[in-house]
Length: 222
Ligand code: CU
Ligand code: ZN
Image (cartoon, rainbow, N blue to C red; front, side):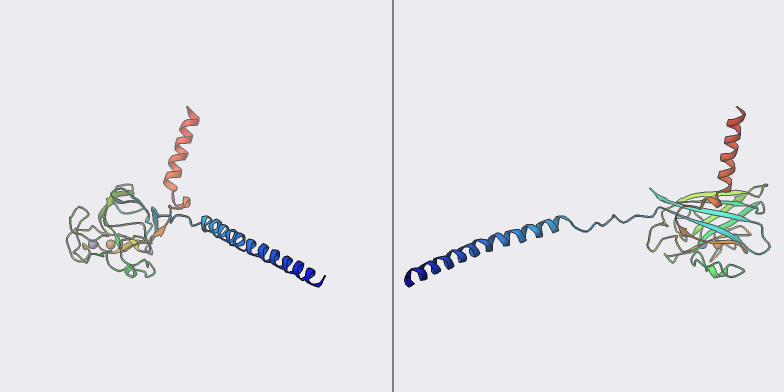
């Protein structure tokens, strides 16, 4: 009887070991499957958003009634700069992107010189070699308003050495002669605004709202 029970006990132990041995590889497979599932579920990373628009709202120098806005739109061929001025004296006004986004001093000299990452001479917007910030002149009519639109491949809205964001737009009281160094002898700085990323806020799109109102009025009378 004693021998018999030992054999039985031994048999029981053997089958237990067999069960454990079978269970081993099965568990490993389960772990592998779990890891594969984790690999398939990588953390969600949205694609980087490339900024395409920037703007500046200019503040007039003390005693001036001039108002101006500028928008920057990045697209094929570079950045399209569109400036709108009102309340200015009729004539040609030097209009540039200056290096430093600081309009805090009364004479706006805090905005530094023309934006010039290439370290070249001042010139007009048509010149092959010119400051990246050389936009020439904005022409103001008898009603005190004027616009300037140009596209330049020397500027970007997106990050980088040529980005307009964080720099300053300056409107001058006089004409840029497109050749005097270092800044075209365009006279006093009469308005200045720091360039920010994004679309021009609706509050500063007065002209467009007026046009929309006029269009609505003409629709109503028809
Ligand atoms: Cu200037
Ligand atoms: Zn210049």
